[in-house]
Length: 156
Image (cartoon, rainbow, N blue to C red; front, top):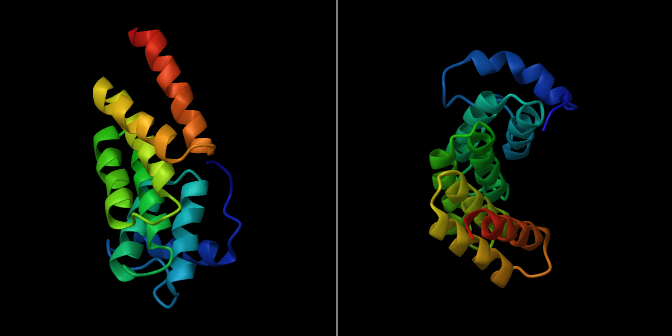
């Protein structure tokens, strides 16, 4: 998730990230503008800034069609910074708040990964097996099966 921002809107709004928390990066922008801004920060490797922008987005636009994705990427900002307990909590919100989201399979996969990193082996196995069972023939299911195999090799 590295690279430069491609969004002119995001480039113009970078200055406002210095403003206090819970003031939108693009105050005059709509949900799409603000979601894209937060996502561009994530793609640019600015994980802490992206996390704040996604939190602000979810506060300002709780029923946006982008809310489920924003919650997923908020969780991902925690995961890439290896804050697995916080990431776990945020990924669980994707599953619990947005159960019909296209992000649920990936969120359950990441829940399994978080449990793995936290050395909660039984919980990891349960989450990963759920992905394989409930989302067969998907990329998350393939990745879950690979991690389960790795766990079997490591843990016996």
